[in-house]
Length: 172
Image (cartoon, rainbow, N blue to C red; front, side, top):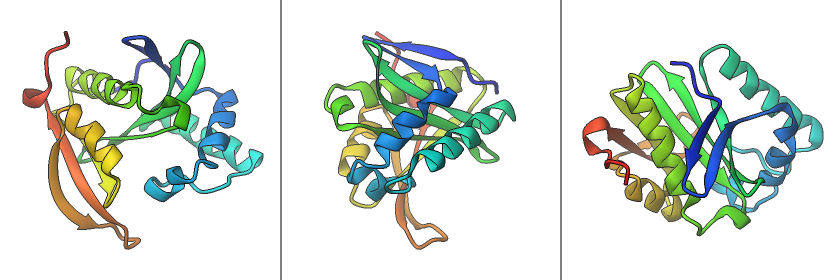
């Protein structure tokens, strides 16, 4: 499954991550709740942000998935990605405070999920750390179904989520 370079949302777009997007990774690592609720490391320096983006660009080039920047009016407000794994694609996302409360996370999740389901995936998976109710609401609004509570190998408790093609709403 080769990811597209761009997906259009109502009033925004998802575009493939670029080398200069290290600035967004740098900013996300400094938002207090992003490292708390995701696997973003806290307070990444410039070199660390550049390396993180470089690893993701290599992941895309190797066909293992990749990230998109969520842009509105030219402003980068967050990222969303799709990891292509043996058990199906896994969705992940993080937004700056300026990108929250606008419906962008839900629209980005819907768009990338719809794309994956239309391009051969039977199901799209996601997970939220226990207590991340904002992210849970995003997945619920995007027609994901809550799955079991699990403990990751690193001891983090997560809720598994999934969305199959039969549960995706038809675009309006």
